[in-house]
Length: 112
Image 1 (cartoon, one colour):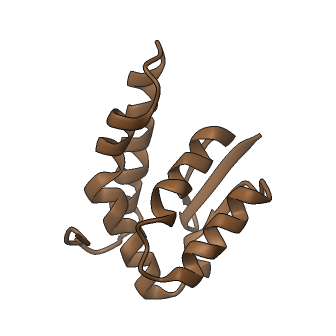
Image 2 (cartoon, rainbow, N blue to C red):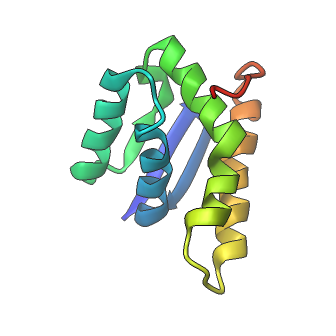
């Protein structure tokens, strides 16, 4: 099953179910908003397969975008298994980061 992240209407990112879950799990332990983290965990645990960023509080949206921009690709390079497809998977993660800019999210700073 594929997963879908909608950054705004018309700007979305799809991935295999496994990469979608990994992308949300990347956020869960990093988010300061524990309610949003619990929501993401529920999506993963129940194989819901989609995340609409607009459904989240504004501060959580910015924190998610910041984490993706400042660490998603690096974490993927370090944590995802070495396979013949890893380069493509990392490129796909970069596509998500690029989409945060296309969606018009403002510049962010490393959340630390």
